[in-house]
Image (cartoon, helix red, strand yellow):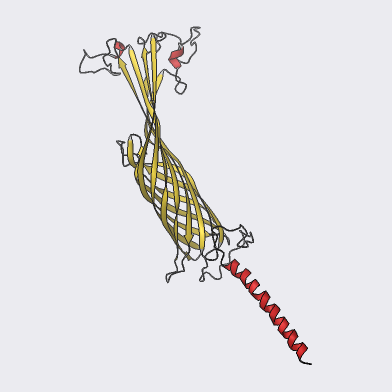
Length: 388
């Protein structure tokens, strides 16, 4: 009578033995998943980003998991090129920075950061009066039309500059004009909290940076009918020197261009942070080395005009020549970046932050005629964070 019960028990044990390994194998496969990316809902977010802050357990700080996002407004000062006489000075520019990433429960994650900086755009300008000014006794004025009830029109060349409304050349000299952008992708690891309450996150990744340097310079010269230079202001110590009225030729020379730096390489970095009451204090340090492919486009415009002084007549002749050059170069770039920030926790997931930034490309940056210049910038930022 016991044999049926024993057979039933053995059958139940056999079924359990067959089912259990299959379930364990499925769970084991899920636990050992090591793919680099995750689904957006992997961390089961509740999307209550603005939930009230729970400040009852600040002594037990737990770093956030899942997706995070930060946005910053940058206010930076950038160093002038080495070839400038005013090298050592800094000029203001502004930009933005966006960070997106995630951290998995196994303390591995990815981190994307992009930075854009527009400016500074600092130029020196000098307005010079050209040769063919209208005579004082001419009632045509200087505004492009007749004046003082005089139907005679002002010569068209007399108000050829739409910015000044006069017959002028604006000589611009670039001092510090640039555009900068950077993209980086990093693999991150989160280490255990140390005895001082700090958490460390090493990172390793790739970096692409673009730096455009805009350069411009202009000059204006006058000559007499024999080709001798004529000053715009006579020499008071030499009455026999050429006078401005002797000028019959004027020459305008404009040199301008863009030097584009496309840099790509790798970087190593480290982020560390710790919680103090409602403040999250953090710092990030990066070192990078990249290959720089430089492209240079330059343009030279030369305009020579022959006209008598003060006649109000059309120029006797005008010659314009334009030369455009393209060139390429290749250099090695190294540098580093530091970001220090303090984020104030407003809600459970939202924080407002401010920080200090230093960005330095130590060598290999093409600026103007220099192929091996540097790019140094420092300043402040403020922004918001979400779930970081």
